[in-house]
Every structure is written in structure tokens, then in C-alpha cells.
Length: 179
Image 1 (tube, rainbow, N blue to C red):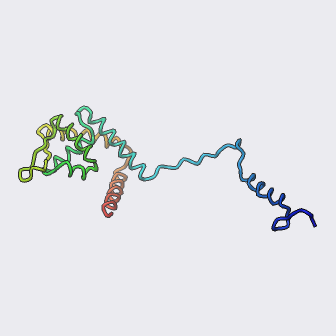
Image 2 (cartoon, rainbow, N blue to C red; image 1 turned 30 degrees about the vertical axis):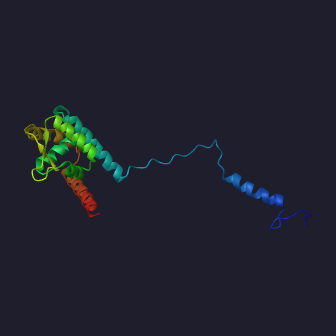
């Protein structure tokens, strides 16, 4: 038998202390070894939808530049053309804008002579938004430019693929409304 003190399994303390050090040294990778890069992940659905929206809005902005409005401003004009009872708050809800952004956008549209603000007759606290005659005349001129941008984005799609895309997007929207 060995005269020195032993660990719990009959090894010397020196041998016991060395064992964990050997185990640790095996798990450390040498610094000179090349690091493997993980394969690039394909973008997810959220990312693709966001990129598609961004690409469309950028195209719309380019097409609408000669008319002096942006794609976002056109969305406001289009909503005002559909209803006589729009307020800044209702547009914020419909278009998912914060009130500060909407106020700035409405200010710009008013400066361009496309929108007016009118106080409510029965409730002076309400401010209704109206298209001016210039705003009404601009909308039909803009629509062909937007169709051009959309056609560019759907180039190479078959009619069946476009119909499927519309169904899928509609399902996403309906599923979101259920929440």
C-alpha cells in the first residue's frame, strides 16, 4: 500500500487533483483551429413580409415622386377619398401610425393643398379631414403609377401564383384579426 494520503477512490491526492485538469484541457479548443461559421439561415416569414412591404413602398415613392407625394401620403389620401368622417385618430388606427407622425404627414398634405381640416359642427373638439379639389383630382392620376410599381414586383408571376399569394396574404390578415 502507498504511504501517502489517498482520495476517496484510493488514488493519491496529487493524482486526484491532476485528473480534473486533464479533463478540462481536453475540452478547450486550440486557438489556431478555424472557427466554423454557422450556415446562413434563410429569412423567415416576418422578415420576408417586411422586406416585400419595404420594397413596394420604396417603388411607390419613386413612382409618385413626380406627383410630389409619397406612398404613405397616398394611403392617407386614398382613405380620405373613401370617407367623409375621417379624423387623425381614425387614420392612425387604420394605417398604424402614431399620432405625431400622422400630424406631421397631415401638415405636409395641407401645405401641398391636398387636405383640409374642418372642425365638427356638433362637436367642435372633433377635427375632420377632407380632400381638397386638388387632392381629389390627384388620386386618379396616381393610380397608374402605383399599378406600374406593383406590376414590376409581380413580374414573372403567373395568374395562379398571384391568386395564391392574395389568398395567403388574406389568410394572414384574417388570422391576425382573430387575435
